[in-house]
Length: 403
Ligand SMILES: Nc1nc2c(c(=O)[nH]1)N[C@H]1C(S)=C(S)[C@@H](COP(=O)(O)OP(=O)(O)OC[C@H]3O[C@@H](n4cnc5c(N)ncnc54)[C@H](O)[C@@H]3O)O[C@H]1N2
Ligand code: MOO
Image (tube, rainbow, N blue to C red; front, side, top):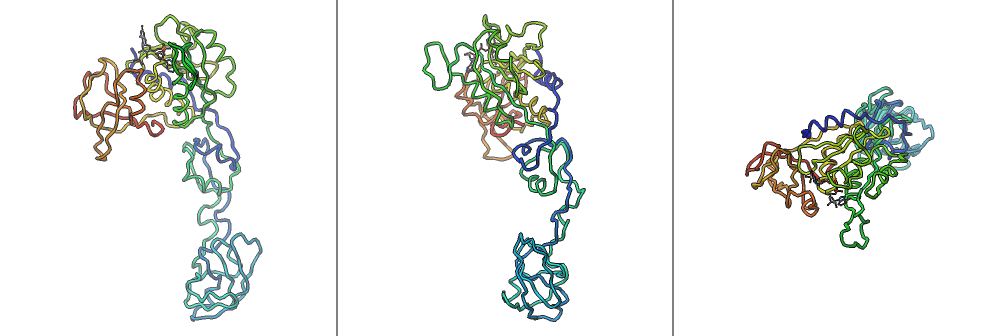
């Protein structure tokens, strides 16, 4: 049996980040959340023009050296005013925050330091040149680095990227994933079930995992138990960057993935020393990674988090690593010997820095109720047959993107 770490390394070695694409900067939804493949550098000065930091009056500082002073107000400059204003000696222009500083002015007096007059204004104090003026280029100058390649664009980067004058942003696409459930026993959620039939819960669950981890769902499909069903589902992969199947990878008489991909084909079936999630298939089919995950719901779930998500992150240009937080077992439980247990646990966060975990239901891989009540996956090393109270375990939070 392979260790989970060796298996992950094998999968990661099989993929590259998706080829970068150029996206118009205005199509924010098409680059936000994606990893920049090239540095973003400012192409214009931000702000583009000297402007007022306050609502008040544009003045010449030299006209106020002997306060108080009363100056005629020769006009108004609201933000967005595109007219070219000029301020003469001994004059004031009423100006709003963000409006361009008129030629001839070198300072702004905020309205609170005046009588607020519209025809003429009495100004009670002197101001230095540059007061309440935001200079062109004081935020970014042409050529300044804005966000380097390798960073995943998020909210904090957005204002700078859309303001700095670039027309396009170059990003790695987010992988689009086809989710395929195999099994003649499966029916769509909401359908009436005959005896022996079950709801296809892996399809919706894996699609939800794909989205939660930050990727796109290309399609969700349910197919039967034959090799032909598998081949038909994979015949047209336009718009698909990766494939996740569930079921059909163990030792039964009807194992469609194994039937479709026999020995020597592009998909290899392996046993990984973990519970749940022992039987796994992986290969590159038509240039796209295919993850053949085990059918039991908890097995599919942990296989996605441990194996598929890191590979998809790598395809998206992201860090593939899974970061774990340490927690302390608050209960004793047994685990399968010789396999790393990926335990569904609840997390007691009452003492930050000293998290406590307890099993969320049993360890069997068909249990969806316990999964629904879990907050995290705890990784119990293969050498541990019994978790003792106080044992320290790495946990993966189930509320985020699993990384
Ligand atoms: N003789 C052996 N039997 C099994 C072994 C083994 O080593 N030898 N391994 C067991 C382990 S571990 C796992 S995990 C499962 C993996 O089974 P498959 O991937 O072949 O999946 P299926 O047989 O199709 O289904 C297993 C189980 O999961 C249910 N299932 C499948 N698909 C879905 C779905 N889309 N939604 C909800 N539930 C699904 C299915 O009904 C079965 O109950 O094999 C063990 N057996
Ligand atoms: O590996 Mo299976 O996923 O233990 O139940």
